[in-house]
Image 1 (tube, rainbow, N blue to C red):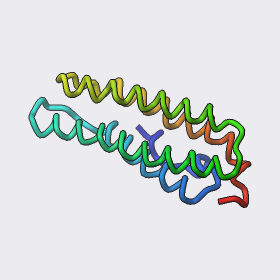
Image 2: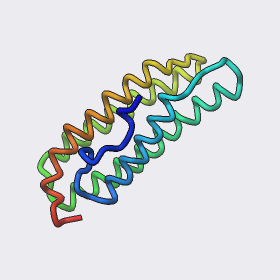
Image 3: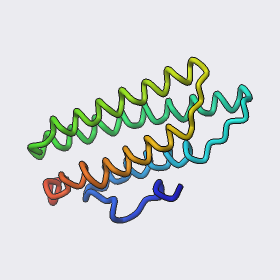
Image 4: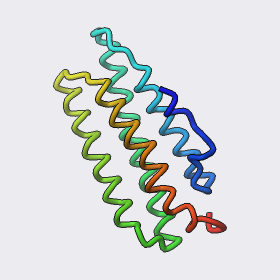
Length: 134
């Protein structure tokens, strides 16, 4: 899925946040390329992808929220709510995977809609606040 390839139009104007977004999209691309063959190694690979998505997203959310707090971004609470919704949905995928349900297609669909949509919509709203700040 090429929507997980970084495009200059995804830039929010902050080098550090753009680098984090690029890393997250790389993990999303790994998820979209994942093929489950039912083996233990394949299932462990899926768990690893989910864990990477959770861990790195949490790190990114903390950084992003800190930057937005420092620049006085007025929609910070909305941004935090979207981050919480992502985390909650990812926990559901993690729980399902632990129970043995490997749903790569739903994960890919969720990630594509969430990350690309979040960067292009919600994150673009704060880009103007970062001009000269970060």
